[in-house]
Picture (cartoon, rainbow, N blue to C red):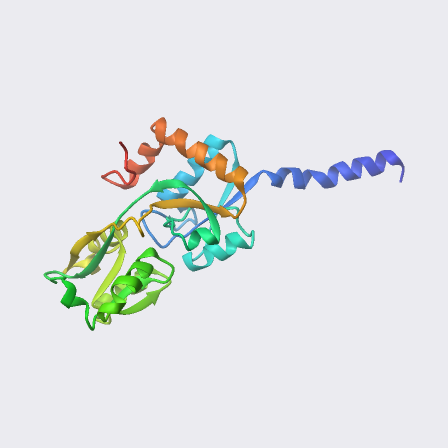
Length: 254
C-alpha cells in the first residue's frame, strides 16, 4: 500500500468521526404529557422535544433526541451517554453538584392532589401517606417540611404509578408539578372526584425553575444552549411552542 492509499484510507476512516462529532445527544423523559410523550408511531413529541429541536436549530446543532426514565437521566449525562437533558428537570443545588444547568426555560409551582374537599392545614399532615417522584424537588421539600409533621412519603419513578395508588386509596395525596397534575390526572376520567388541595407551593428555595442539563464543565454546549434559548424567547419562537401545549405562560415573561 503506497502513501496515497494510506492517506485515502486515513481520510475515509475519519469521515464517520467528523459526521458524528457535531451530533448533540439529547435525552428526555416521556412520562409527562404534554411535556413529552411517545406517539404510537414512535415519534417523540411534546413541549420538551419541541424546545430541544428549536434550541438545536437556532444554535445550528445537529441533534438526536432519545428517551429514558427520569431517575436515570443525570447518571446517564454524567456517564457521557448523552450530552444534554431537556426533561423538565427542576434546578436544585443538589443536582447542580452533578450537572451544569442552563438558564431557566420554564417554572411551574407544586400542588397537592387529593380527594375533592380535603382541607389541608398543619394538623392534616400527621399520619398521611403522600406520593412524590423519587428524584423531584417535591420530594426534597416534603422531606424537609412534611416528614417532621408525621408524613410518610412513598416514592415513584413514574408519576402515573402514583395516580393509580391514589385512586386505589393507597395514598392520601400526590405532591407534584401543578401542570402535570392538571393535564395528566385531573383532566382525565381517572381524576374525577379529585382536585388540587391546599396552597400553591412556590418556595424559591425549591422552585428555581427547570433548566437544560449538561455534563459538568461543558461550557461550550451550555453557552450555545443559553444563547439559543435567549433568541427563541426574544423572537417569539418559544411562545409559539408554549401555546401549542398550554393555555397560560409557563415562563415568567416580563
